Image 1: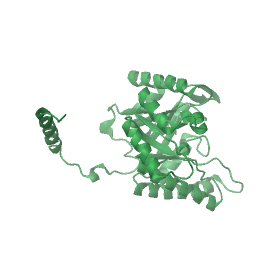
Image 2: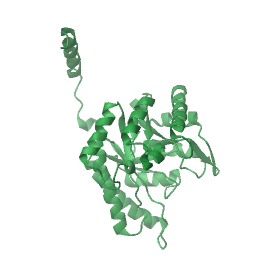
Image 3: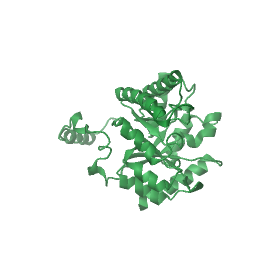
Image 4: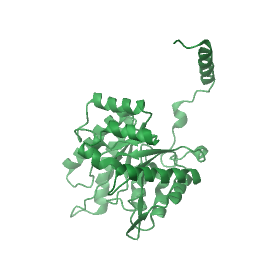
Length: 310
């Protein structure tokens, strides 16, 4: 059936309204690094979007009992707005799948109304062998290209967890920053933000994370703030210290206080996120034993309640 005359009139009215909006040049969005992580004009805007990190389905995805397509359909049905599709759930990882497969995933997500909030790789920049570190750099670069193709705005990387004998922390940090900068420069050419995750490895504290952010000082670099991986001191204070550098999150069920794993105070956590002025995706990640669908449902309900209360 052809659209009615009224439908055409409404469309023309919409187009006229769009054309009446002043054009904003790209330069209007360019600012200095770090200080422009947050736009003060948007502090009160309710734009936190709940996503799911694919690691929540680690076992079924790894065993082949669930496909990425299945996960996208599940997330859409549960009311998630996005999915963080970790790269190692793509077939053939660490190799990047064919464009046909990547575009299939992008199309599938679009068809069920789900955005792709990010992806991530396993790398280790604490490796003392320059050749092996270069392999990690190439891994990140390859998946930056994949991220661009599936429409993921950010790629998650790790620092690493080695403590190579004969090298000081400062020496390790120096080569890590060089390698990470190479990845960031490549990410910029593909429109993909590179973000490092605090993972209780080389980055254990808020000060460790801040050291990376300030040393790099780029608007194409930021922090994936893992709420369950600050295990030194008060996790909420550590989260609060670094929330202003977060370009994406991993919201977990537990935090560690004095070495003890306890349920997260979700109201407190969401309050910190909102106060920081962060806008964007807050991916949830469940861990441990149990049916992932039950665990995901419980965490999603908890987050949604806090989002409406705080």
